[in-house]
Image (tube, rainbow, N blue to C red; front, side):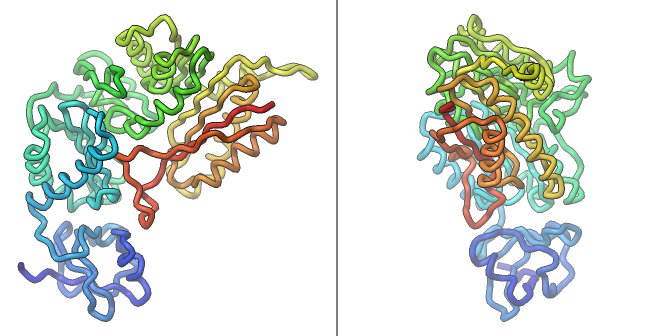
Length: 423
């Protein structure tokens, strides 16, 4: 192996890397032994010259090195193939029945800056680091060897790309698939761009827990669907039999459709996106459940507020036995966390007023910057303000296809709870 340029780490800054975190920040770098092209492979050592690992270097990023391995490895097609096979084995072990799932979860699978989602026979790739961008051809070749997909699409539209100096990229990387329309990807809220109408390729049928969903792989939120909630859909549906259900921030209706199949008396779907609601209402028809589902394209905050307003000395009439709150992230930065917490509290106050005694509130937060304890405190504050007593009956996280490495906090973002309303 050719000797790699060396990046030395400042005293006291190596412990986090030794413990398994893959990011070496710019302010932790002591020195670099040679001029290194951005995206090149380097070796990392502590200030005592002890080897820590190898990774991709980027002089213009706050993450100066993204470590790939604590050992000396050659990063080629065979390397990516080995890592992808190891990641796939985790999914097969923990989700043996799933045909659609996340194959590679970036740092959670020790491939920082790379996400690969599988939608039946089609893969969607998302890259957010320069090192991975420069090795895209090797990654695609490795995916073809391991999974032999019908097509590999790229939706590298994550905001993180701008911090690596990378433009938004989407297109077909391998196989045959209808090209994306000129409308562009979804907005941050999961709403297709306003011009995303005529000329869009047909939706792709995806099976989730035995239910069929139509997914637009070009304009859907994230890479098309909330794969991280796949097992939580089943868990929440346990409380749906005979219930009147509200699925707020429904997107494609994942929770609502599972609730309908589980025997809900009625499911009402809410989302601010007209396109999302239309798709969410097509999915029940695909599964013979259309008679149990209705939906509205509305601002969910306004909808909840309108139904919980009451005159003095009056109380709103509870209408639902199961309410699901699964909003998009309310914050992308730590600075906006206080505003996000006010938003989370607002929707919980309103939802609790609409929940019948004995009913269940299932609620989720997908912001990395709001930890589980803080999220729980917001819910309890809402319960206090509405004079409600809650019994916690479940806690949720992302599925095992989105693996959490405790020493890498960034791998964990989804948290949730289910509460029974005591009174």
